[in-house]
Image (tube, rainbow, N blue to C red; front, side, top):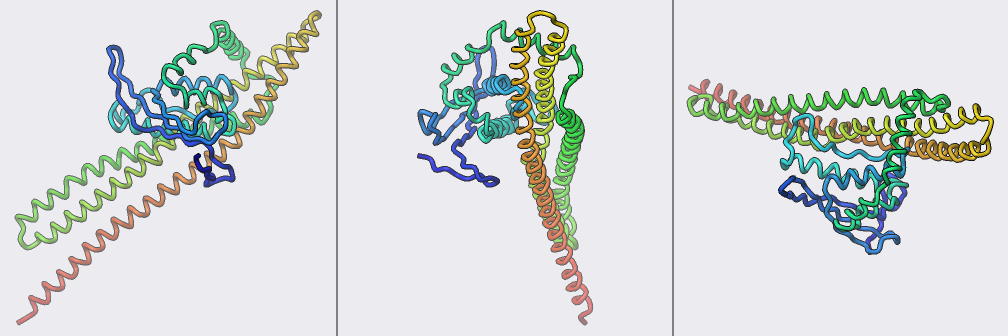
Amino acid sequence: MINQYKFEDGPELRDLFITVDDPESHITAIETFITYRVVTKTTRGEFDSSEYEVRRRYQDFLWLKSKLEEAHPTLIIPPLPEKFIMRGMVERFSDEFIETRRKALHKFLNRIADHPTLTFNEDFKIFLTAQAWELSSHKKQGPGLLSRMGQTVRAVASSVRGAVKNRPEMFTEMNNYMETFSQKVNLLDKIAHRIYKEERDYCNEMKEYGPIHTLWSASEEDIGDSLKGLASCIDRCCRATEKRMAGLSEHLLPILHEYVLYSEILMGVLKRRDQIQGELDSKVDALANKKTEKDLFSEEIGKLEDKVERANNALKADWDRWKQNMQWDMRSTFMNVAENNLRYYEECLATWESFLASQTVDLHVDEDSEDRP
């Protein structure tokens, strides 16, 4: 039996542990794709075993996300990495791309596992436990054509109606907050990528100077040792720069881009809440214009009022939880970047101070030798 552990940032006990690792490439006659091993360890009674191991491809994760959105339209579903890399940072199916995606998929599943509602979703359990053929069979049991058409019709009707008449002020404030947040986090994401690119170009250029000074030292007898020391300093600063770039790539860039995706998800959640509200508003308007069938309309309105209340309560609770997590993520990420920057500048400064001090000693030794009779 697996031991239970406490969250570092809360009193809850974790009883579900998920790891995404071991990517494998698969090549068929019509496509090339990657599968990932998903290992689950749990102490929950609703699971038949304490440990599961399955393999999943990216489209399986997409299926899970769509099922969660379908079951919980006003909960904030964690984002998935995009199917394709748009920035041209890395090539698809390169080792870097696969590792970046693996980390994002690992975070996606663990954010779901840590969510107080999503973690108990039946499709999530099936995703973690079913073998490939079982999952494929379960996928085919999706909503029927009429159900999908009904969802599409409601979405179109909602967009045609425009602004919701009776939207509570709280959700208008949420919408305004997310518009501002989206602008700011997208700007931060662009700036962070620009900084990373400039650091990479700087590091690549600086790497050329070390060998140049080493070669130069071979032809300058008087200053050869100084040139070798200079080359050594440049090499150490290059390594420190690479370490700082790794910190940006592993911590800052992923968290900023994740919240760029979160901003899109939040705007979608707010639209779905408005859609549910819009259904209620249209029924209320229809009832006001109806002289017959009022009992039937009243019953439908009562059900829609309950649906709106559930949607509102779910979003309000998830909103507070999301904001708290977002603020913690941003604070810890930028603190990590600041600490890495301090270590970088301290290391580079110490390197150059040591080199300059050695040159001062050598200079004094040379002067003393010249003063001797």
